[in-house]
View 1 (cartoon, rainbow, N blue to C red):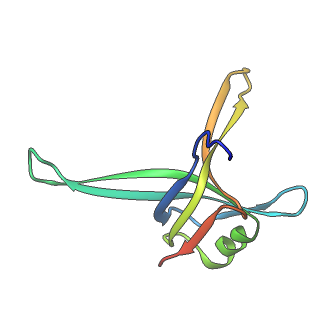
View 2: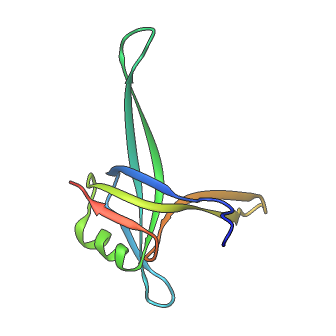
Amino acid sequence: MMLLKGVNKVILLGHLRQDPEISYNKFGKIIAHFTLATEESWQDKVTGQQRESTEYHRVVVLGRLAKVIKNKTKKDTQIYLEGKNKTIKRQDDNGKDNYLTEVMVGERNGVIQITK
């Protein structure tokens, strides 16, 4: 029996903020990059006013799922996705470490559904 050490799963439903950026790695595999906006709304308990909040998620999609993004999406397309968080460490010109967290949607465990 394998012991579960953790779960890294992201589920999002939102809209593309711009057309996806398409690139290819050194092996010729397609990669799609885009920002997904997720919105939520609620009623303020004190004022009774409707409130809204938007979060922006940087998404990277690999392989055949990236082809779906390339061929079927553009700015404002609504999609559902399942992937995992991936944090990348980069150094700036001054040697300072910077961290970028992206949602990675791979071929094996990822899901992409165009909803609108």
